[in-house]
Image 1 (cartoon, helix red, strand yellow):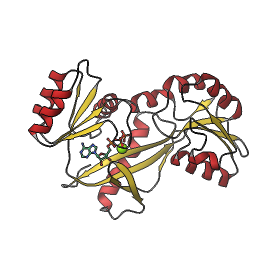
Image 2 (cartoon, rainbow, N blue to C red):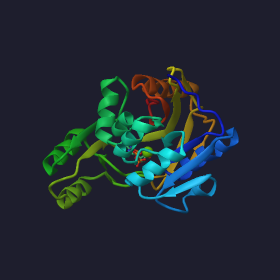
Image 3 (cartoon, rainbow, N blue to C red):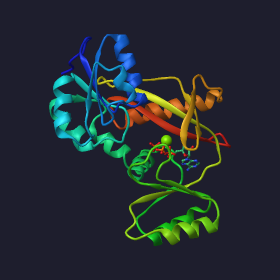
Length: 266
Ligand SMILES: Nc1ncnc2c1ncn2[C@@H]1O[C@H](COP(=O)(O)OP(=O)(O)OP(=O)(O)O)[C@@H](O)[C@H]1O
Ligand SMILES: [Mg+2]
């Protein structure tokens, strides 16, 4: 049954970074209260939230406190513990659920699932040993970017290999057992876009205008809305972002990052 959550109900947010802070700000504007859970007592969202829970993201007791303080729970990014989200799901409504979180946390499974459903991804291979790493670099061809399969944000846990010497140096310092990585073709990017799409319990899908992102040293530097990217590319980006939330039956908000190649492909 659909339970409507009206102000002044409390929205619980796992993660109190800038994204969490923007959710809090919007929640306040709409008359909702907010409870933020973050390990850092001075996280950006804590300055605005009605209540802050300071504890590591794996802390069950903190999850219990969030569950009792909030009427509905969400998370600001994918680097939260899926077991905690799954546990919260037993007593609380959590959007998006833990199933899509598990997929989005793992760069191989994320790309595998997207490919299987016909969504475009960069050419990539998952590797679990030095030998697999070597053959993936050879078959994809330089330049490539090697990324840890899990964890990492703002380009952390990524290495770009442009020359054979760089590839040999990485292979030389790679120790077995290798934690799972993905090797991706390094694309000569024209631009980077993201689409925030939202799907309701009733299956209705909506999306925000396309954002154009510029990274500096792998960290998001500026996001521009509206973007001057060609309307046909923007429409395609929106179609992809919306189709992903539909295809995975997501209820909640999902941001899809996309690369635009020099040829105008997404
Ligand atoms: N295959 C690639 N070709 C060209 N540039 C890339 C490639 N992969 C990553 N980059 C650059 O590095 C940035 C960070 O990479 P990516 O978005 O994959 O990782 P992240 O932001 O650390 O993690 P997340 O998976 O959460 O987005 C990209 O925004 C892009 O600028
Ligand atoms: Mg990214």
